Amino acid sequence: MVQRAPGRPKDLEKREAILDAAQALFAQRGVDGAPIEAIAAQSGVSKVTVYAHFGDKAKIFEAIVQRETERLNRELAHTMTTATSLEERLVNFGTVLVQVMTQPCHLALDKALSLEAQRNPTLGRRFFDAGPGHVRELLAELIAEAGRKGEITLDDPDRAARDLLALWLGFTAIERRFCGGCLPDVDVLTADIRRTTRLFLRACAPV
Image (cartoon, rainbow, N blue to C red; front, side, top):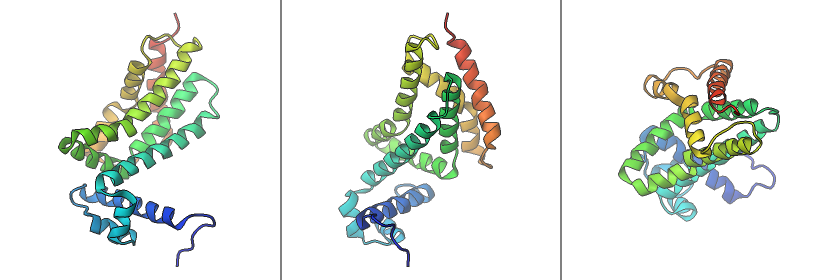
């Protein structure tokens, strides 16, 4: 029997179990291939409990996106505490982001999200705002703060964030989507993030 951690509400445990099961099933089968009954069976709760917590699969999917975004936020906040220069802040941000985005489970979930967005553009926009859009906003604010400090020169932090994300992800994301393979070595990944970050910083160097 699995013992609950002290102070952890049973309802929260059930909610997390539902999200874990749904995330795995969505990644394996897509949204259409993962009915509520399957999610309930894999999470060890009743179908009524799933509906009571979320209502429908769209809300489950949205909760998964939000949970992954919150996890990324925590990891980003942790890496920012030790960075002393703008380059280090950006390299830490990019390394954590790309590590998360290249996890096999994330790639599978991203595929399911893309398919769902094609069927329901409004829902797709909600997923985008909660996930990639939120990441872009965080990076844009980091860049804007650097601009206010005179560390870089730029006119549009949002556009700069888009450009830097493209440098970080670029062809590597396309290659992994089609070819799969092992996760990149963290040292190799960090070196690539540093190289592309320096390209960005040279382009935005103070005049």
